[in-house]
Length: 294
Image (tube, rainbow, N blue to C red):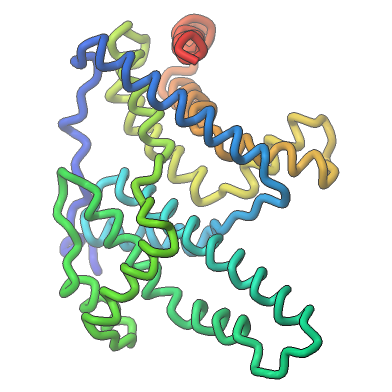
């Protein structure tokens, strides 16, 4: 699609900060802080935490969302839904494989292999379904219809039917126990920017918001190298041990930390001359506010 015909993505021109009542900001910040604490605690209790965030798949979601003019929150949520679904499927296949391979009396064809092949063959369908489901959670932009999704799939040479598309959505919903309204780092970024917008900051919050979106895109696309770099910096070793990596896995679920880091980096990009002033005062105020509500 050429640039003249490419549909425009969701506009960010109407984004405003500093206009929400302080009580609303406090409630939102408290809710996010508690949810973030729970996510970090749950991740810390898991052994061998598995992730599914291949850059090419994330890029696929980003490009598809752009083609369908979806807002960024839908884009990020689609990635989160896809990852949760694929991880759940991979875990189920591993459990099934361990049972079948460990049973000496098992004589039938290994069902887990069939399930794995089916999962791989329908991956693009699952990805499109995740974007569809994420679009249905948004109250501000159009929902991606079955006709639009089928037209896209057929353009890729995948002649799925409407029934197969609906079944795919239902499979994802059932696999995740219908819990698809997942948090994204963007929610944390926007609430912290609201705090900065209310208190006033050197760089306008609206201006920071645009840069934050670009940096969040990079974090999603380069998730593994970004967090591996953080791990090496945290342990002070270029070759961290497996135990160190497992303990560090909870940091990947800390969206509040990611949001603060993205805002700080955005402020540096926008106005590096005032970096020391913002990083020492305004960003500290945000972090102190979060810890106060925890």
